[in-house]
Length: 496
Ligand code: HEM
Image 1: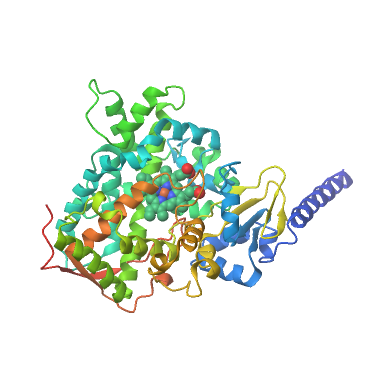
Image 2 (image 1 turned 30 degrees about the horizontal axis):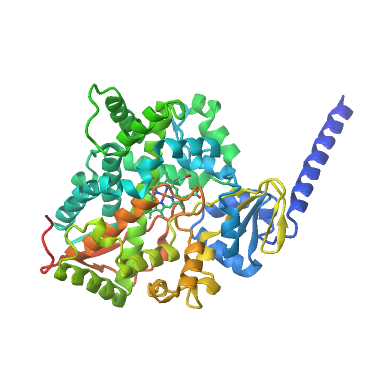
C-alpha cells in the first residue's frame, strides 16, 4: 500500500516538474526576472507593490523590447507591436487578468464591458454603441455643466483642498448624471454617498490585487465556495443603479432624457435579442465604474504637472484667457469651443503620456499560428500586453527628452511624426477594445480643465511634492493626495 502511495506521489511530482519545464521552455528565449518565468506569484507580488509600472519600464530597459513577466505572460515595449496586438482583424481575445475587473453582487458576477468576450462585446457595440459616439456628446454637455457649476461653487469656498479627492466627487457626479440624469450628490456632500465611490475604488483595487491570479480570484472571492463562506455581498453601485434602472424600464411614459440609461433602453428595444436587461444594467454600471476615477486621476496628474511647470500653465492660461477676451470661449466652456484648442489638447495628452492612468495590463491572447514581435516568435496562447508606460517613453517615437513633461512635442511634430506618436499612444488602449468612453473622457476633460483655470489659481501646498512617489498600487494609478491652495481668480468670470 505504502509503495502505491509513493508511486502515485512520484508520478504526480514528475508530471508537475514536466509541466513546469515545458511551460518554461515555451518562452525560454524571452528574458525577465527568474522567478517570473516559473510562477505567476512574481507578477502577483509585483503588482501589489508600489511603483509597478516604473519597475516594468526599468526591466524593459534592462532586458529589451520583450519581457517575460509570467510563465505564459510577456510584455512588449515595441511601438511597432501596437497595431499587431490590438489589430482589428483578427481581434485578439483579452487575457485572463480581466476577470479581476468583474464584480460580484448577490452571488452573481455582473456583466462588465471591460471583461467581456468578443462576441458579447460586438453585441454591446451594435446595441448601445451610439451612446458613446461623438454624435451623442452634445447630449451629455448639460450634465457636465451642471456638475461644473457646482464644482466652482463648492471648491470656491475652500482655501485649500486635496484637489484629487474633489475631482473624484466631481467625476462621480458627472458619470451618475450621464448614466441616470441624477446623482446622489458627491460634491454636495463633500464625500462618498452610500459607499458608491468606495465600491468603484474597491473594484480597481481588487482587480490590481487579483489580476495575476484569476483562478485564485474565482476560488477565494467569486465562486460558489466564496459565496458560501463569505455570504452574499452587495455592490452599493449595483444596488443604487438597479433601483434607478428598474424605475426607468417600468415607467409608463418614457421620460424625455438623453442619458445612457435611456439610450441603452432604446438600443435594446431595437435589438431585443442582443442583450437582456441584466446585461444592460451591468454595462451602465461598468461604464460608471470605468469612467469616474480614470478621468479624475488624469485631471489630477494634469493639474499637478501644470503646477510644477509654470511656463506650461502660463501658456495654457494665455490660450484660455485669449478665448475669454475675444468671446470664443464661455464659462463654463462649451465643447464646440474647446475641442480644437491646441495647447489644451497637448497638455492633456502629455500628462496621459507620462502617467497613463491604467496600471492594469492591456493583455491579449496570441491567436492560432503565433506571432513574431520584436523579431521573436511567440507561440499561440501566450498572453501578451504592450506595456503602456515603456512605450510612452520610447525615445525614437517621443524624442530623447521623452522622460520630460513637454506638451510642445505634440505641437512641434510634423504630420508623420504626429501619426507615429498617436499610434503609440495607449492611454485609452487601441483597436476594437479601445476605451468605450474615450469621447466622453475628452469631452469631460477638455471642458473641466479650462473651467478650473478660468476660475481658480491653484498652487501646490508642498511645491516640492513628488507625485510619482505616492502612486498607490491598484489597477489604476491612484495619485496620492495633492493638496493645493485655492485662490479664486478676481478677473475670472462668474459661471452662468
Ligand atoms: C482619462 C480618462 C480615461 C482613460 C485614460 C481611460 C482608459 C481606458 C483604458 C486604457 C481602457 C482599457 C481598454 C483595454 O482593456 O484594452 C478603458 C476601457 C473602458 N473605458 Fe475608459 N478611460 C477613461 C475614461 C472613460 C470614461 C469617461 C468612460 C465612460 C463614460 C470609460 C469607459 C470605459 C469602458 C466601458 C471600457 C471597457 C472597454 C472594453 O473593454 O471594450 N472610460 N478605458
